[in-house]
Amino acid sequence: MRRIVILLLALGMAYQAWGFQLDLGKVKDLVTHAGQLREVNEKEEVEIGSGVASNLLGAAPLVPDARVQKYVNQVGRWVAQQSERPNLEWHFGVLESDDVNAFAAPGGYVFITKGLLLKMNSEAELAGVLGHEIGHVLKKHHLKAIQKNAQMGLFADALSIASQKSKNTEALNKISGIGTELYARGLDKDDEFEADRIGVVLAARGGYDPYGLPLVLQTLANLNPQDSSLALMFKTHPAPTARLETLDKAMSVNLDKYATQPELAARFVKTLEPNQGKQ
Image (cartoon, rainbow, N blue to C red; front, side):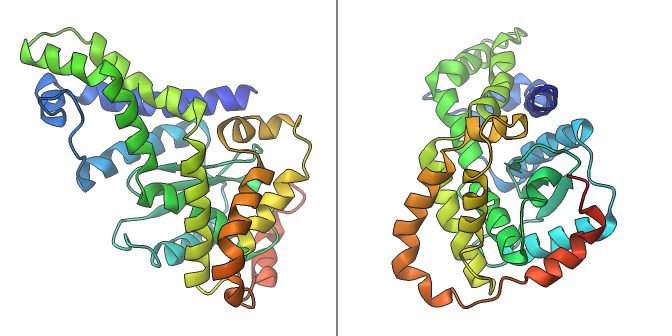
C-alpha cells in the first residue's frame, strides 16, 4: 500500500509542478473566454507528459536491466508506429515495482511495472498491453479527463484571477490537484474499453496475435483480488472479466483472421530470463 501512495504522490507532484509553472498569462492563454480549456497543442501535451514521467521515475526507478528496457522500447515503438501518431517521440520503460499496473502520460510516455511484466508469457501479450496504453495517448484520455474536471469551474476561477492580474494561486493549486485525483480515481470505464480495443488492433497491425491482451486480462482475472499489488489497478480499471466480455464482442468478428499471427513467446522468455524468480 505504501508503494501505491508513493506512486500517486509522484503523479500528483508532476501535475503540481506543471501548475506552478503556469504564470497567470499562460493560464489565461489556455482558457477560452467561455471559461473552458482550449485545445492543447502537441508541444504542451509533451511538456505535461514529461513532467508526469519525470516525477514518476523519481518515486519508482527503472529496472536496472538495459536489455529489458531496450526490448520493451523496441516492442512499444513498433506498436506505436502502427498508430495515427507514429511521429510522436514515444518513450517506454519498465518500473522497478512489484505492483501490477501500467501507466500512460500525455505526449507518448508509457510505463509498465516489473510486477505486470512478469505476469506475461509472450511478446504478443506485451504488445497488447503497451497498445492499450498507447491508445490512451492517442485518444488523449488523460488530457480530456483534466479538461472535463476543469470545466466544472476550476479554469473559470483561473480565468477570473488572470483577468484581474491577481497573484492569488488558489485556482492554480486546484488545477494542479486534478492530476492526483485523476490517477487515484482512474479514467472513465469507456476510456479503458476503448483503449483495450485500440490495443488489440495495434498489436494485430504490428503482426502479433491480437489475443495477447485478452490473455493478460485472463491472467489478471485469475489472481487473488485481495493481493495488495493489484489494489491500484483494480481500483482504477474495470474488472478484467468486464473488459474481456467487451473485447470479445469487438474481436470475434473482425480480428479472428489475425489469430494465427505469432505470439513470440520464446523471444519474450529469453529476454526476461535474468529477471525470472524476482517476482
